Each structure stands twice: as C-alpha cells, then as structure tokens.
Image 1 (cartoon, rainbow, N blue to C red):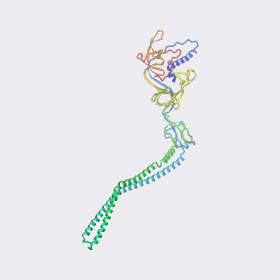
Image 2: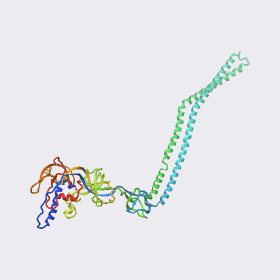
Image 3: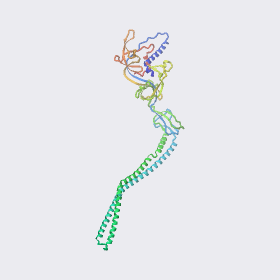
Image 4: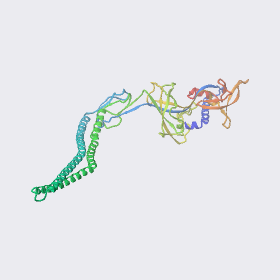
Length: 503
C-alpha cells in the first residue's frame, strides 16, 4: 500500500479509469441500444466521525502462550495425558516421566549433604571450644599480670623491711661493741662476732631488696607488653575460630545444589500445566526418552492478540496505545476493538515493496477488475522491510479462533462530528494548492444543477471521505460530484464496497 499512500490522487484516478473501463465493457455489450442518459450525482454534506487509518492484515494468536518443558531430562515418558485440542486448567497433569532413577540419585545426594554438614559442624564445635578456652586463658592471664606485679612489689617491700631490721640490729650490735672497754672484756669477742654476722646479713638483705626492687620494676615496665602478648594470643585463637566458621559456612553448598537440582527434576517428572488454556502442540509420546525441549504448548484462548507486519513507510505512524478496528470473515460485519501493545524496534521481515498486493483502492478490487485475481497493478522490483506489530484484542468474541485472518485498520487520527463530503467531491485548481467544492444552489431549466464554487480547506482524510472546514457551508448542503459516464457512480461503488474510513 506504500505506492498508493504516496500517490493518493493518482491512485483514485487509476481507480476511476479502471472503473470506467469496466463500465465501458459492460455498456459496450448492449449492442445498438441507445446510450442511457447520465444523471448528475450529488452528495449531502454530513457530519461524520472520520478516521485516518493504516490498513493491514494480521493473524490471531493467543495473548499468552506457555511452552511447557521439564528439567527431568534423560527420563522415559511413562504417560502423556493430553492431546492437541484438549483444554486444561492450571495444575493439570500434562505428562509423567520416570522418577525411579532420580529418586535413587536424590537419596544419595541427601546422604552426601548430611555427611558434609556433620563434618562442618564438628569443625565448628572444635573451634568454639578453642575460642572458649582462649577467653578463659586471656582473662586469667590479664588478672595474673597485675597480681604478679603486686606480689613483686610486696616481696620488694618485705625485703626492704628485712634490710631495715638487719641494719637496725647491726647498729645496735655496734653500739654494744663500742660500749665495751676492750678486748679484755669477756663479752667483746662475742659482741664483735655479732657485729660481723649482722654486717653480712645487712649486706645480704640489701642485695635481696635491690634484686626484688628490680624484679618489681621489670614487671611494671613489662606490663603493657605482657598485656599485648596476652591479647595477641587470644586474637590468634579468635582468628582461627573465624577462619573455621568462614571455611565451613559454604560446607555442603555443592551437595545442597545437587539435592535441589535433583529435587526439582524429581518434582518436574510430573509435568503440569502452568496456566489454563488450549493444548496446541504435543511433542512427546509414551516410551520416548525426554532430553529437553518443549513437551507441549498451551495457549490462553480467553484472550487474543493479533500480529501483523507493517512496512517501513508506515511504521513511524504506529505507536503503542493506538486504537485498532478489527474485522474477520468469521465475525462478518461485526467490528472488534483492539489496541497496539508492541511495536518491534527492528525490522523483522521484508516484502516486495513495488507490488500492490493488498487488493483494493477506493473500494475497488483490482484483482476482480483485471480478471487475474492478483490485485497487482505494478511492480518496481524493490524490497521494503517490515516491522512486527502486536495488537491486543479488547473485544471478547467466542467466534474468534487462533490462526484466523484479521483485517486491521490502525487508527492514526480520529475526528468526531466533523463536516465531510465524499473524497471525489473536493476538487483542486491546476496548482493543487487550493481546493473547492461545487455547492448546489438550485436547478436550471434543463434540469441540471446550478452550482457555486466554494473554497474549502481539507482536514482529515479517510479512505472515502474528506473533512471540509469552511464557514460558507453547513450540514445538509448538497454538492455536485464529478460525472462518471455510464452505470454506477464512483460514490455508489464506494458505498457498495463498504468503508471503515467514515461513519
């Protein structure tokens, strides 16, 4: 339809010419009969709802389609519970696959999983015990640090007291010795020996006190290092505990994945319908080994979509949300409503863009006119790409079936209650820049119509009607149509062909 849309006026002219040829042939068969007089044709300016649309042909498909498969591959089909044409509800059994080997594998996998979990738990328990002991050791060692310093201080102070006592005793002994008259005194030797003994004791106590003082000072000086060592030892144990926890955190994960996978396969061996609908394909038979792929296809036939291919000339005028009028052979004159839901962002096919294969222009069937049924009037030999458009059917009609052909009018623009005339009533001057109609103002004596040339502006154009915008005309006014010699007028042909372009 691309060529037609680009050359609409020429297309109408071609249609008129072909109609005249056909009419001429029919009239010519009348022999020597006098040619019938041609009456002037008129049309009334009426208010209509005009729709400018893109015509296309599509196919009804289910709005939802589920391809049913299973993860239980490599298994034998024990039962196939459906056939094409069956209706199913969500949860119904589609097929049953052999679960026996899967059951054995699942039991082995569960045992392996439990073994991995038990081993990991033992490691965690051991690590916990080690950490608990490290906490006890840390607390005891921290308490011992200050306790040992305190004991060292007490030992030092006790040694200082011993030294003070021995020093006092020495001083007293020296006084006693000094008070004796001399060596001649019988007590002198004894007193002298005591001084000597106490002197050695005092010196020994001094050395002991100095040693214990240094031990205390060393203990106090090493306190921070000792505490740091205690915490380092504890932290090492805590790190070891955390490493064990981290290392066992994923313990059994591989085995669990194996169990989950086998469990899913085991459950999937009973293949069920995920949604309700009509079974449109079954690809499995009893005894087959299922190795993956689609087992069956279920379509939701309570809701339909239409898919169509739109050429590149029209695709930029298609957008989501546009209204669509749908007709089918099954529903006759009843029109279904739809809405565009998807427009492919990339080309999905190609057509011979030079051939007018959709079959009609202005309501005329070119295939019928040319007698070959082809409906083709030209072929440029060029290819146009097409884009897939999906339309959701909003009208429920139980007569619709999957695969039926849909005749589509995708509404580009819709103007309601506007003044309109048949397309061919609007004429143009030689420059094709201004338009006019021949408004009927009365009749001449010979019965022909008097007309007045009225300038008009064209609004929306449907397939067969044109909106006119002018203050000098009103609803009910009549206009003169161009003459079509012999037989029916083009207006009658248009009316007889039916129109979705104007209501």
